[in-house]
Length: 213
Image (cartoon, rainbow, N blue to C red; front, side, top):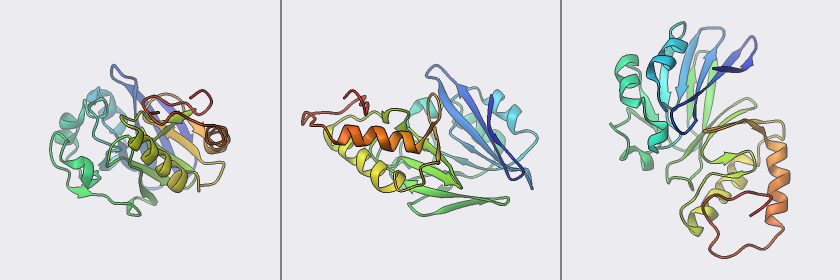
């Protein structure tokens, strides 16, 4: 567990779990101790231990891939809080969410509000969550590139999501992705500018990197 942010208003913890090194995030309102869990990759007991001194309000899912859902059923049963996901990813979850989130929605808990960004490309219903200068990007954007895509159309879609929904945010926005390290938006914007200035093969997709693809 790593504490990414801690001040008088908010605490953000990252837990890297499971065989694919998937990140779960716990966001805590410091004033009320209300919390939300973003993604459920594995090791339910570890996540529950971190939540026990808070009052969980939601399980939020960035998308429906199984490396983000290993502890889903156990956590859902134990926490008894609403699960929230995008309608386009809901059908492939282990069980139906109570809350369907769409672009522009808000998830309030304690004194914090998470804004919902629908960012399709990695999956049709991929979501990011934003509060203040902190963006939980799921598998939409990582340090150095977008999330993996299965077709050129999906790559076009994820780049559209990133440029129209994420790159409009301030340069100092901290990006907390679904795997690996965090990044800062200014760096990603600069590297994408290099990517977009070069020609690319028409079939480009898969694991794309801004500086070398």
